[in-house]
Length: 229
Image (cartoon, rainbow, N blue to C red):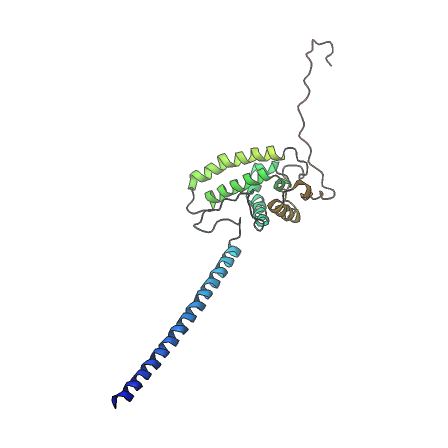
């Protein structure tokens, strides 16, 4: 009977030790849960910082190819930034090419042309900004194939537009009105109903509209024709 108190004492000690281990495990589980939440929060912050450092349409990060943007399917939150980046690219890259002679400030109101510009810009980024890009072949492909194609598309899309820029050809590159650009991008990405399409901004006072290209002269009658002049 003398051993029974000792056995009970050892049992109580074992139970106390197990209870302490259980508490430690519970604390570890709680810490793990908090750590998982902290990791998730850190991941969200990293994604936000990445978006700030590399916004949509701003060009690819080093070692990452430029993303292909579909103007037809673009999300509302990305549309204004995509148009703004495209406008900056036009002003800083296309400004040195003949295609700007045919551009009009209303270019962003032509969805098909916007898509062509987005695609040609993506090809330019691959050729000139992507370290693992196509090198000289990609650069030649851009300057000899994509750029002439863009010029033809601009002429076809904007040939009838009159909301243009100054003459002569040495005038500054036409820059679209930023508030109008932003409003139109949101309309395009959310609505697209003709009845709600934002009206283009009025031309600045005193800025002449571009002259229309002269048409072909009427054919002259042969000299033998009695009615010839």
